[in-house]
Amino acid sequence: MTRNPIIRLFWLSAGLFFTGLAFVGVFLPLVPTTPFLLLAAFCFARSSERLNRWLHEHKWFGPLLTNWSRHGAIGKRAKYTAGVCLVAAPFLSYFLGAPLWTLAIQIPILIGSGTFIFTRPDGPPSVPSQPEAKD
Image (cartoon, rainbow, N blue to C red; front, top):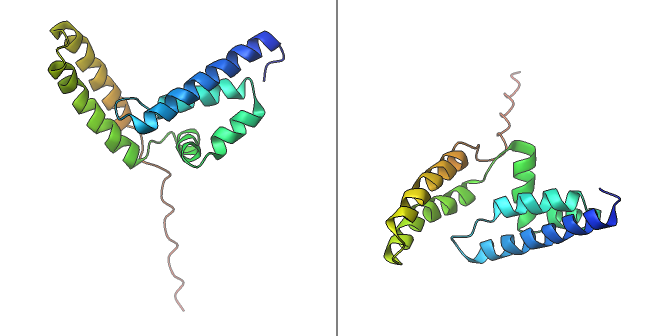
């Protein structure tokens, strides 16, 4: 955590901003949650131990952060939601009348994002069961 109060205020403000965006992402399907949570955690680690702890212990956000920090993983439910949004976004843009050049930019970015998301592990590796002892 930084000692400079101006820099600390910057990180704290950024963390609150990204936490707010993550909350919006919980309710709006086209707004991502996990990237904003990761940014918020990064900012709070530099500004507020209390808010960093709150974020990591949060009922909804804590498991996402723990899964990412310990295993570099994105859960199946988050992947499913992301996949639906990634596929829906260009269709929604098209039907809302977005210019074709925006779709030409949007689609490769969505493909890259999807590639990253779906190549991450689903969660913690399962612990192999111990073989039963034979008498």
